[in-house]
Each structure stands twice: as C-alpha cells, then as structure tokens.
Length: 103
Image 1 (cartoon, rainbow, N blue to C red):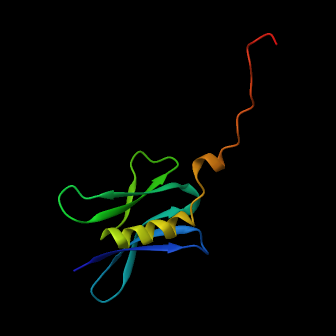
Image 2 (cartoon, rainbow, N blue to C red; image 1 turned 30 degrees about the vertical axis):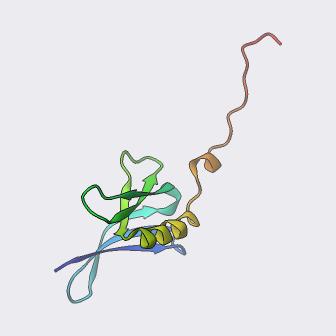
C-alpha cells in the first residue's frame, strides 16, 4: 500500500509530507515552510512503546507529527530538527519598555 514519508529540504526551506505508492511514485500532500516552525517536541505514545517527534507552527493550533519510532530514533530526529528551527523568542523583536510611572 501507500507509505507516508516526510522530507526535510533545507535548501528549499521546507518540509514536505508525501504519500509514496508501491511503485515508488510520491504525491505531495502538504508543504510547510521551515520559517513557520517555532519548536520541536517529543512525546511518548499512550498506547505503546513508540515516541513521536512533533513540530509546532507559528500559526498552528495543533502540532504536526513529523515521525514515530523508538525513543533513541526520535531523539536523533528531534536533535537534527532543532538545527533547522529558529525559536519563537528569537524571532520576535523585544517590545519597547513603556512605563506608566511618572519617573
């Protein structure tokens, strides 16, 4: 059957979610710009031993699952993804300090 695949393309600055058929042809289901990713997380499955690597988008309501696997596998993927992500705190310029005090 069809196999899901995630491609991280640093040169194009995007993540592609692909469905690959048995003949090897892929169909892009969704694309996400790396600039929209503000965080990478890891969770453990509630119904088994697997872990999941999640990405958090700047305007997303829910995280997207990037990969599932064993804890050591997911730790490697998360560490690799951390190299591609600029955290939200580093993107937003600090707000100017305004005070309502008279001094």
